[in-house]
Image (cartoon, rainbow, N blue to C red; front, top):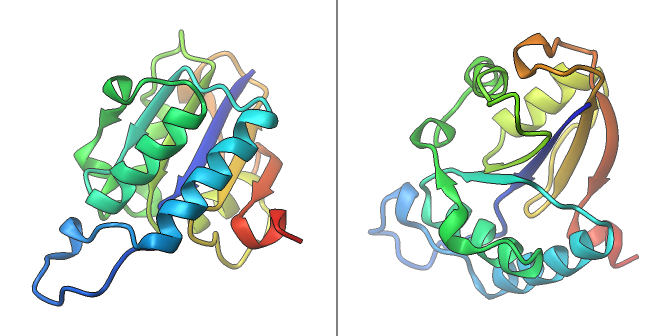
Length: 165
């Protein structure tokens, strides 16, 4: 069994119009949501063996906050430049290239690609993965390169507004 966690970055700040998109930080709500979701994921026994983040400042900060709550060291977070601006096809390719010794991997990145790849992999219609939302998808396979469209099982789809209800 292979498990992928797709975590969309938390809310970012638009205060500084001069910043490039990749350099936008989290805003206060984003930091609060990332901490809350990290604690929630810890209680739900989310235990990735590898966390891979987009290089965008807001994505890496989200990954760092969640990793701290999961007791996964920030220094162990990998940056994959391809996650910034990735489309659905590239995300699918990234997943298929994961090392087979890894069973549970978390990717931290962006919409619309994350929403689209969740729908592609599971056949579920989710419309939108909210900021700081995470999907867990399980695959009944031993090799990442054998994952196929609509063969994944959507086991979790959680986001801040949902868990606060």
